[in-house]
Length: 468
Image (cartoon, rainbow, N blue to C red; front, side):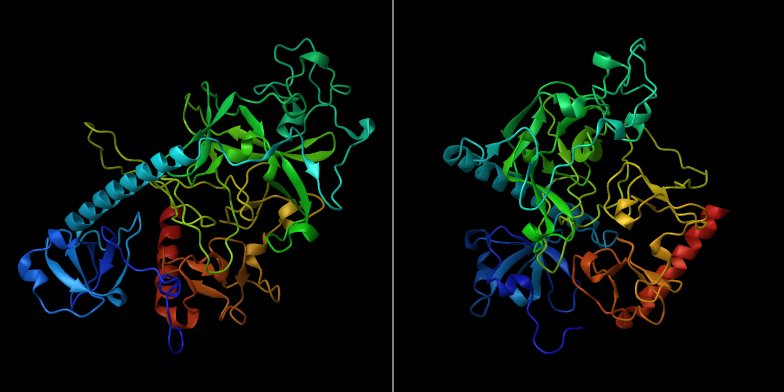
């Protein structure tokens, strides 16, 4: 718990509740309850005549429709997806969610109309077709003798195509026109030939400018290369900790307008083109015409300055840099769902790197029951590990001994001796997290031993159920 006086980020910024804001309100001995800040003309006269202090304002509770006077220290903002205690306040919470969405849509429509009046063109940037190195960064060009050659032939039906068995395509290597035996018929040169999907930039309702396809896009199709200035660590060490980054802010192509989503329809893939690493955007599923194209930014969220996510996905985490919530499929209307008696089936291996969140060529942990996979680059490995390799999730980050507790959002893990002060119970979802992955701020492990025991008990029950 904080020592001495403590102020939340809203109070530090001078932000105060406004009319039509949806809030969680604590009144008397009652539990926290959703309410809306009211205009004076909508408040009954007997409530207006009640004695109240300067700074207090009227709110109306959802469900009961009661009015009370409250003040800023007794409220905090309602956020999309708030569902705690839903079994005890189902009607009120449903009303609050519907009203919140209606007010958000109203605000967004007004903002969109205002933006369209004042800004009919996207923000200025310099359009470039290939990556531009900045500072000490160098673009690598491989010798022809070093470029891998696939076994495809010019006589094949679709040589090096998306459904072929081209080894280069499987390993995310682009074929070189002077090396590939398929010659001009080779279909694995999308980066070099810039075979992009036809897209257009448009103004979205809530996320500024975005990108959408002008025709249907098939699953696995190459949408575009992510092009920009390639910056080294010295150029941007205040923002990242990696060797290189592609910054499409001042210079780039249309891909710079693609927005983030916690449930994206596109993904990034790192390909090797003529010896250098390039980043492409590929369709995760069939995408109909005019649907906005989005991918998961997989940002690293540092400090307490969380950026709200407005992707609108059902599994939205609420913040950029926070892992999305597990998605649950809803039953179709008019069809009764039978109660399943089959045992729960879980994936033996995950599909995305536990370190960076991207797919591609991955190595898997061989420890029994561990589903985690990684890119060799993310582990700083020069080659794929051999034998029964165990991932860094199982060793203490400080001493290398067997880990007793670990962050559920990243490979950070610690033994019993070093875990104190390093891991916290997230107040957002109750998961064990390191300080960089708790969107609600740290809650010391020492204060949450009961929650730790409960979580461990729950995990053991689930693992026993799955193994049975």
